Length: 160
Image (cartoon, rainbow, N blue to C red):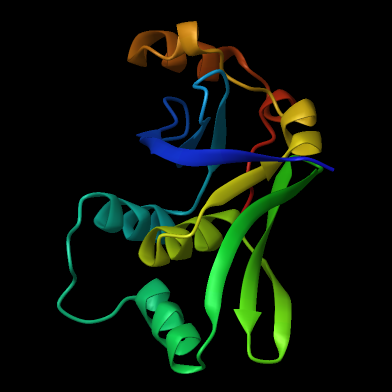
């Protein structure tokens, strides 16, 4: 399987449900992948995207500290699967004992990746099965129209 390098393009709200959506973008800016996330995780991602340091560590800051204290490194985060409209992710760690893979929700994996500057990848099979947004459709109005007309099955909506 091939892993496609992606970055977090930004956050937006689903115009129908007002649920937060993280939009991933490939490095060639040809594919945009929306992933619905929970409000706390979206807030954590937004704080990091905006370089806002909370007065006390949030959960993803705590996770980063635990990983660093254990002398491990986040090598990468992979959006690894899409089953029944739910995305799955894996956090790849490098430890003294070798490489480890940790199952995670995409929202948590992405929030952690931002905090440790780890690269983000999406399995090509996930991109094949998920509805993607073409670059010409990424204006705010076109994106909202597209989201309003797409079914949950087409989108691969992330469920809590």
